[in-house]
Length: 463
Image (spheres, helix red, strand yellow):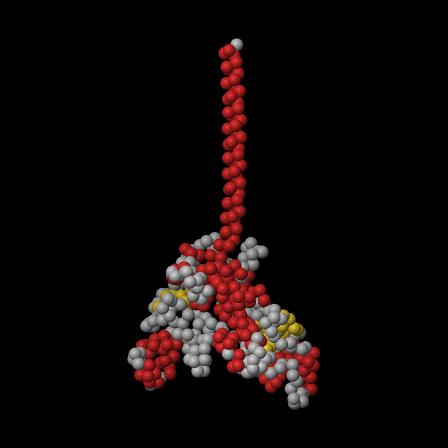
């Protein structure tokens, strides 16, 4: 299980019927009778079906596995946690790369970074599409968790790195670790074996920046043996000898697991002499089983090593805190309570967002600017012809910030601004107290002086 699981938000299609009717209506098929609808769609060319424009919210799926009660018998998390007889039939090896959301950003952003406005738009889109309750609280908590508060000035590169971490954790890594936790707890009818890996080697001739580390899909060439041949599909063609050796080690782990359910178990057939070094390297390193207590995993790099608790604090944020925040309180009956601040302002999102009606998703494309290279180009506005969705392509307004995102340049600064406000309040309070104290002392001295003068005048008059 690599870079994703059934618990990822994009893994299950939850509104397929809405999109099916959307396609049917576009192709002039009846939508009242399901049997007639299906038969009508069967008569349409595949090209026509694929050409129908769909407005699918970012990070979600229009068509894919659905919870039908047969193939997918129930909510994946419930099946994993409660139906252990099914989930425990198989051994599991799961893993990820460092950056699983690299494709969300452009090459320019990779070099220059992003500003806080772009960060906020991305995270607001993420929160709105993934959650239903307490959206504003969740958004502010995410920003706070993924901000380095030890640095008063946030560099665009640092903002980019923290944003990629947040999106990677939310969309792939945390759901994957949660799956591993469920699997490692199974005890009946047998205790299956669970293994975790993190691929950390960055290919020297890769197209990606080495600064960010390994990105989504960068482990695939080593699994399929691309470094061992001159050319393989679309993978890079230039690898070092060390990377060829690493590929042999990875392939040995994977084939061992496929055959025995244990990556440490040696293959039965005799290995060639060219593979003896990688085999010896793999045998020297024992890959321990994963459990939700010790959370040991293997870091696969030029020198594989065993580690534990991969990003434990960050992942506990998504596995423990966010689910708690997302629970709807029984006393909270108003819908507005759960909305983001400035919820309906299109300039505060980036991408396609869910509407209250799942069939009316709004596609919002806002400019991707950086603090160092602001863009001045604009795009023509247009409208999607889809029956259930409206596409709004916004013109860029580089000198005007959205109302809700003009709090010290970013909604995220509310935490820092709160600290400054507290300090300012204390300072003003102390200043006012000292001023009042000085006025009282001055009044006392003045009254005492007037009393002394009056006594002196009375004494002269009597004498």
